[in-house]
Length: 415
Image 1 (tube, one colour):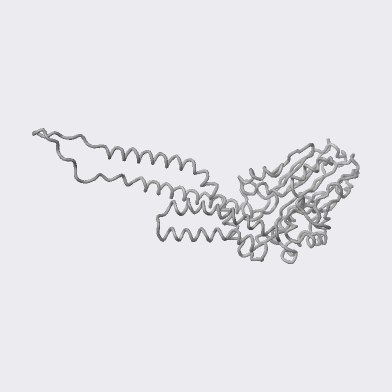
Image 2 (cartoon, helix red, strand yellow; image 1 turned 135 degrees about the horizontal axis):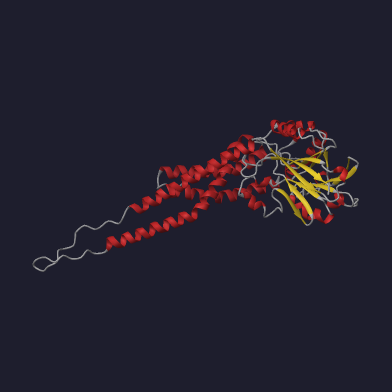
């Protein structure tokens, strides 16, 4: 609860600053003093409050009706900010050109006209009326600001609309072949259906789970790995939505490890519920997989951000990976890719992860890269291969741009 409140407070501060910038560019710069500016200011204030209210309302108070308007605006806000920031440079150049033209025009109109000498040798008197300064400069700046605002609004709305369609559509199936040096020849081609970040919650329910389960079952996989962040809510709220997981089919079992969102949603209850649905929950432990005359170790750790005792205990790599036969290949299920730094110390051959959503909202993937060693796809860190799936759901905005929802079939290959 304290973690959620702290997150909401930080978000409120950040979104407040963002909305002040948006108000400046979309309201103050595009309107004059008066009614329309007041209306725009009120709307900006309401939208600034909507974002943290949505986070608090959906996570704490169960006010799921806030989810659609609040999370959609969060996505539009994000892309408005990006587009307007990108426009700052050309806008600044254009304003500078207008200012120089205005200064040149003022200098020209201020210069005295040559005196005309009359027949008697006397000069005509200067014109009585003052010459007005050009009045077109301010109107041009206003037109420029309004043009930028319209362009930013249409662009943000278009990108968000595309992202909604991507996020709410069926996950794409990716197939990846990963060679493991220790994999016995008899186990060549062992297939692991991998999914993460299903994120059942205010905007995703039972139908979402059913679609994912049907998709995985069509793959006829040897193993199924659900790599954390299954839910955003309690068992009482989302137990029915998770129920279709009991229908998962595989030759050698279905497995689950906790993600950070399970710890916001009642991890003890969810571990018991997932176990009841027939998935083996790997909590800092490993399971021998005997298949096709060979043996592979499948290990799983609690999320690296876990902080508690018992079921809610933190990741324990020694418990999961220590004392094993080093001649066997080991595949580690770990929700966050960053766990690979520790996993590599134990000689893990392959780590399967999620958490990043592939960035979910490009170009946010660039920021994710600062915190996680691999954002999407296959990488290698300190000799350990790590594959990161985009996840099948979304968190927050029902929007995915540049990172479509995904289920992955990982095929292990022997040398």
